[in-house]
Length: 155
Image (tube, rainbow, N blue to C red; front, side):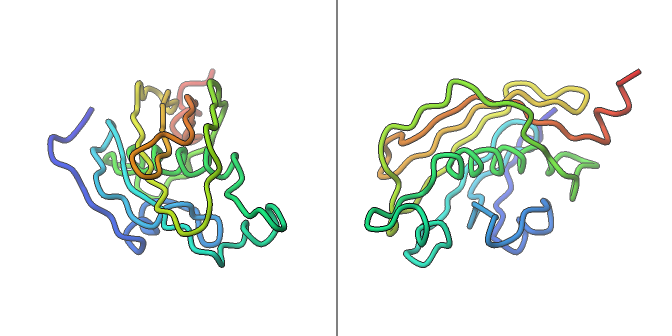
């Protein structure tokens, strides 16, 4: 299921593999992707990010669900880098055990660490962590799907 070597992806290369685009792309760089196994990287949170302008006036912070979206997008890179999956859409199907521990604000590097626990028949069980200064600020477990693969197994 995995390749023993890892891949690094800059933003341009990330765009080659997955379908999210600015301003909704929540990853600047994938520093280590092991196809089918894990993906890690970061997003540098600049003060002019669209979500800081509206969440919240006088107290701008990254919305919790966008933090989770960043985890999902990073985990998806571990799936779309598998042979035959480049460019396929990966969808969030469910999320649980979501925890937010502190506000995420501009000026921080939001590190994203994800692991594919299981990938089979177009369904992936994943976990992810968001970190700032080596401290976990959010975490979640989630299911993702790749519809064209999943469709082959639905009777």
